[in-house]
Length: 396
Image (tube, rainbow, N blue to C red; front, side):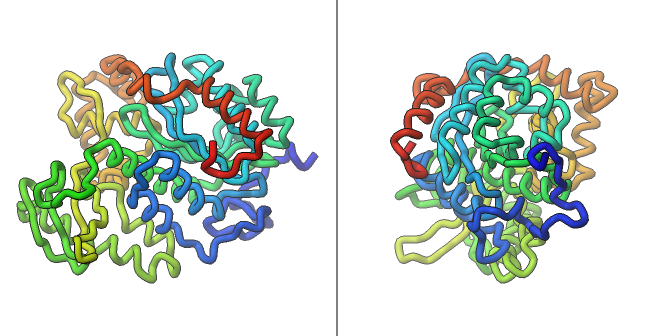
């Protein structure tokens, strides 16, 4: 039957989809402008639900195959106390998201770890044999199948501290995602995770960026340094920041529609493994670019440098060296060097052994903000109730 037949997004004879996962909803973007998703993520609405809703609205035209998309924020730092909040529905059935929430609640800690760590940032179930086998055995997946959902595209924007955002697109048929398309959306996930880290830092609202904590440089859109302190004031920092600011401006120009993949490649997750570049508007409305400290928060490990711990933590999330290089704004050879040094220090002879040793030395902390983030079960019940009420996107 058609619903049990795997399709490949890049296979010969398949519909030409460009950067879109698939046709079917009639919700089509005016162009393949992926940069708009990054801009919305870094713009940073103050409310979590509003922020995630804006990202989902920009992503839906690319991801919706006819069943809408859904999203939520999560804290999987402790697999035994998984928490999720800010659920968003954009055309998807509320029962689909409720079933996903129950899967995270009633599944074993191993299921939670499989879902939220140690796997690629973008995949369908059919593209990941282990995940496909484990999740299809969950009772909640039968609930999804009753809704006509026979595969799921997941885009997981995870940070090393276990917190992140998940965007889900229910699929009516099995789909094997092409490596190229998976990597494009993994890069977008990198930026969503980076923007989420910024949201956990002090807001700059109403502050003079020259005096704000974590702001180490102010760069004009033309590339000139207006203000710099610390490493940003060093020649290497100035070169990195001016070069990155120029690259981001090019990505946000005509390249965003003429060559969206090249535009996305230019706008890396961090600059020199240290800074995120975001817009800031002066009181007179003049735009400048500020460089904020925004490294991944990796748990300290005896014997590893902070950079080695950061990169090893990202590898433990299932990120490839190529994706980590993009995420950190460093070269692939630099990433490989840090992983090699970490392996030697921890006595590991393979990537798998390194990740296992790192996880053993860095036991997960207690879940963050347990009183402010509802349990997945509570979210599941809340989402399910909205189905009968006909809740619109963002009203959950």
